[in-house]
Amino acid sequence: MNLKNVPIVTIDGPSGSGKGTVSRLMHKELGWHYLDSGALYRILAFSAESKGIRFTEEAPLAELAKALQIQFIEIPNSEHIGVYLDDREITTQIRTEEMGEKASKVAAFPQVREALVMRQRAFLQAPGLIADGRDMGTVIFPEADLKIFLEASLEERAERRYNQLKKSGVHVTLQSLFSELSQRDMRDRQRVVCPLKPAEDAIIVDTTGMPIEAVLSVVRRAFREKGFI
Ligand code: DC
Image (cartoon, rainbow, N blue to C red; front, side, top):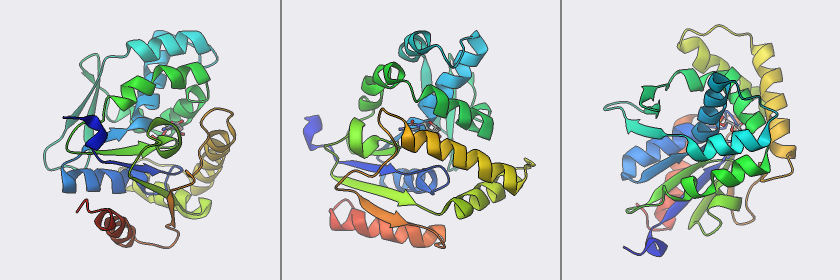
């Protein structure tokens, strides 16, 4: 099939904006492919750390990015997706706040981002793709049919993350989460290459104060208007 006819929806936004949850639910609902681009940067940071490559070494990080052996495997009856590096399951190890912070550091290097472009584009397959990240609509899939950008206040995003972590038994303070998230945000928004920002043709949804069901209904409406549902 000509890939030009395969629909692409990009869902970008900062951490805690709900983009991951919305993307995974739409992926399950429609049976389209799903690219969790943040996971690629998290896996790279995880692998670099285990190989002793420092987060300041751009060229070795980019080489490693090209060589990573990654698999995403659906977990039946679960919203989550299993992540494997060299056949080893690392699903929970890459999900920590610490790994998010490290991912944000390696993601700031132009060579690293370049090394991951083709890998990300390879996720485009029939019957459609939902691509979740920071630069999906601006850089990786500028031709996307529908671009959604989810926002939310920093306070609310920190609170959402706090409640998520508490539910899964991880103890952190709201204050420390708030300052970590604000630092990561600043790095992702201010970096020179592919900064976090909405594409000019993106639909921007401020999800502050909105329960996930309300966000989903806005997103579903946008999908419907494009004829995807
Ligand atoms: O979405 P996430 O929290 O899993 O992403 C982790 C980090 O990876 C994020 O802080 C910045 C980086 N990232 C990026 O630079 N570009 C993307 N498309 C996705 C993530």
